[in-house]
Every structure is written in C-alpha cells, then in structure tokens.
Image (cartoon, rainbow, N blue to C red):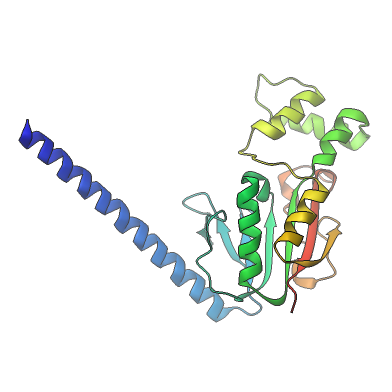
Length: 236
C-alpha cells in the first residue's frame, strides 16, 4: 500500500511539474509575441477579446485557449503582462460584460496603465437599455432582433417572448454584468480616463478607432441597435 501511495504522489508531482512547465512556456511565448509586436508596430494597438474579429495591425488577444490564428491568450481580469505606457490605442468589443464588476474595474485600470499619455480606448458592449426598450416600447428593429435571437441565439426550449430574450442576456454566453450607459461611463472615469464620449457603432473621430466593431455577428442594423460604444482618453 505504501509503495502504491508513493507512486501516486510521484505521479501527481510529475503532472504538476508538467503543467507548470507548459504554463511557463506559454507565458514566455506570450511575452515574446507582445515584445515582437511592440517592436514592429507604431502606433501600438491592443485588441482585448478579439474572438473571430482579428484586426490587421492590432495585437489581438482572446481568453479562449487556444486563441484564434493571429491572436494570443490574455486573461483581461488579471494583471496584463505588459509594461507601463506601451500602447496608443485599446479596443474591446462584447467582452467587458463577460467579467464580474470588480474584474471590469481592474481591467480598465490595467488599460489605463499600459496606455501612453493621450492614448485612447474604445469599449463596445451590449446595452441594458435595449432590453428595457424591447420589453416596454419595441420598434420594428427590436422585433427584427427578437426574431433573429429566437432563430440563432436562444436555446431550443427558450420562450419566444421578450422575457425570453432578457433572461438569455443574463444567463447565456457567459455574461456576468450587462451594462447601461452610466455604468460604463463610471468605470472609465474611475479608472482615470477623461473625455468619455459615446460614439455611434463603427464610427469615430479618431481614425484608428473607426470601423472596428464586428458587424457580421448579426444582421445589418442590429449591432448598432443592441450595442453602445464609448471612447475615452488617458490624460497627458
């Protein structure tokens, strides 16, 4: 019995060492990829939570492991493996709602840290107000979204009603906190950003932040209806 336990504990230690070695290799690869990107790209632009929307000229990062081709792994709820004041632009779309509110605070503080003075951030996220409109005063666009949602996004057993859509928003896809305009503005301001403005979808007065949102995720016109986009600047 003692021999069996000894073998078991050795196996556990070996598995643990192997996991740590793989994590170390992954972290080294990530640091090298970030360093190579920063050496080769100016202005430097960080895309957090790229999903399928891999942007040319950006350092595309994603929590899913392995990340998509052309991207690297990044857990945006943890400290970024990036030095201070390294990037000029940050973009994140339909990502911040997937992390808890304290993690959203930390993520935006990290974004502020790694941006250069006068660097810009753009955050796009589903808007809670859309759900209230769907429930209380739906337009033709809201009805179009609902039909798309029932057909493509909801579970087979879900109710085909506004209540079903609202509950899906809070239960599915890993959503942790669905924001309204005031919550995003407060998060950005609390992280130290200034000049917080709401912008139309895929539209910006800053050339590098124009045309970024992933329209292909849903039929034409629905992304602008369901999503809000904000820009802010790090003082400098």
